[in-house]
Every structure is written in C-alpha cells, then in structure tokens.
Image 1 (cartoon, rainbow, N blue to C red):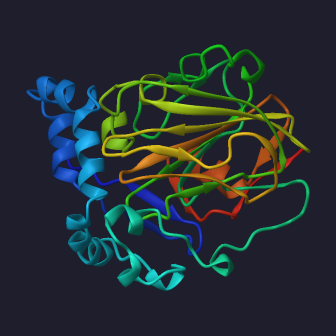
Image 2: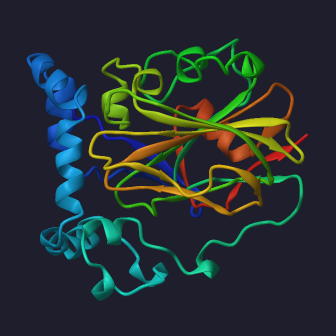
Image 3: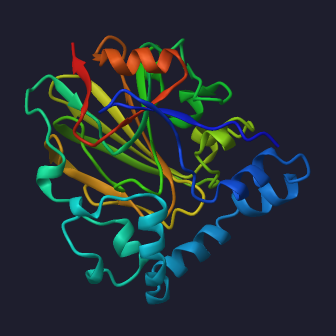
Length: 296
C-alpha cells in the first residue's frame, strides 16, 4: 500500500496542505491492499454497512462521538447556528445549519457560486464526455447521466468533494427552474481520491440523484448528488419549482460525498484559480457561496 498524502489548496490562504482523512487506514486497506477485493465487494458494493452506519448515527448513543470528531477534524463550531448541546445524535450534528453570515455570496446575476463546502476540481471543456478526477481513471458523463448526457457533451463540469469535516448541506449555485429529477440506485464506493485511484467508476456506479435546472443565465445545468460509503442518505429538500441562488437544495447524512454540476458547452467560464489548480491536479478547498464561475 502507498501512503501518498492528498494535497489540497486552501483558497483563502493559497497554501497547500495535506488532507486529514477520517478512517484513512480502512480506506487504504479496502482499495490499495491487493488482497482486499473480497472486502471491497462486501463493503462497498452493498448498502448494508452504510445502512448500519446510518442507523447508528441516527441513534442517541452516537452523540458521544460528536466532541471527538470536532476535535480530530478541527471543526469551527462558532459557525454553527445551534449549540452542540442541542444535537440529539451524531447526524443532527452532521447536518447542522450554519449562521447565514458565515457564507456570504455575490448576488450578481451572472456569478455562479459553489454549491457546497468542499474540495473543487473543474473541467472547463470536456473532451466529448470524459473527465478524470484527481488520482483517478477516466470517467464519463454518459454513465453518470444516463439518458441526459447528450446536451452536455463537450460542456463544463465541476466536482465538489465533501469530507466529514465539512458543512453537509448543499445549495443552488444559480437561479432557475427545476425541470426534472431522477434517483439512480448503485454502489456506495468512497469518493476519496484513494478510492478513485483504485479504478471504480464512482460517478457511474454509485447511487446518485440528478436534477435538471433551466438556469436564468447559464442554460441547462445538471446538479448531481453522489452517494458514498457511510452516507446514510441523500435528502433533497427542494425537488421542483423556481429556485434562487443559495436556496438550500438538500443535505447528506453521515459520510463523505460529492456534488457535481455539469453545464452545456459555451455557457460558463470557471474562476481562474480553480482552472489553474485543477490543471495541476490539485483540488481547491472552497466554501459554499464562493465564486465558482461566470455565465457567458
């Protein structure tokens, strides 16, 4: 097994840091140990373990984990709307609301913002339908968006990877009208780059939800929530109608996960720093509401 650290650029400071990975030794064992194929199938192609995680983290018994995780992952609880003492179980803490002032954003019509806290990788122009995550293998919007991919061939795509330390509610990056929603069952592979480097088609195999939005300024956008190992569920709180920028769209229960936003060709220009870092194979740590792109 290799223990190469995952390097991430902190957008706020410009510094590069090594990501702290909750459960790292188990992820490396499952995906990098040559003898772990049986384990990988048992754990990550079945939803049983993730369902058990979900039941545990919805239980009042899991409340004792909150303080330890806050300390291990250096989570800033001053941003939280509610005090730690108010959380009935770990998942209440995990899907916590933030104080509105902690996530400012531009209300300029053509500004498109990050839909979530997380590590961003952007692809300004897809080669037909292919994108390659950090340390990963080529993946395809044909498998990620079955039956919906045609309009997005050659388009632009951003991956926002959430870790357990992150705020786990996600928001609409721009205003528009929801026209279609679809849930796709699948596996629950880890979305960590350690797993991506092992070869599973996370974006084509994993459980996911797709939402088509006719935006006011950037054509049709597909918003994708990708489930991952340990994720109790994807909960979408807005599934129809008119939406405004930064309206809440939903949340993930326990586990790291990923949001992907896909745009039609020629509709958006991603922020320069995200393009530069992505071209070097580096993810950029951003906050929900931070600049992501401009509508053209």
